[in-house]
Length: 120
Image (tube, rainbow, N blue to C red; front, side):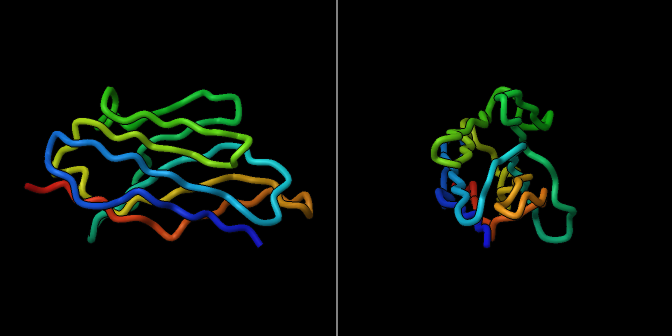
């Protein structure tokens, strides 16, 4: 069993900051890429940011310069620091990971999501 558990969502005013965390646990041999996605009702889930096991990052154009993805491999945790938040950042944020479990099988996993609301 593998679990991804997100935390850190909430309500914040425009211009504010939030830090999301996602901890992986369970039968994990190694973790490859990790990423954050977000989804609003009626729209497809979109990639926000991703990070490889070596630390290379990729961002959606809409968040470049405002969001920073990072990871702590020892803690099996990925973070998303979100600054200068805008109302259009309001969404449910999902953690995603490509990892190899203890059966040496590469699989993709999703967290349950954490809600971020940017509003005054």
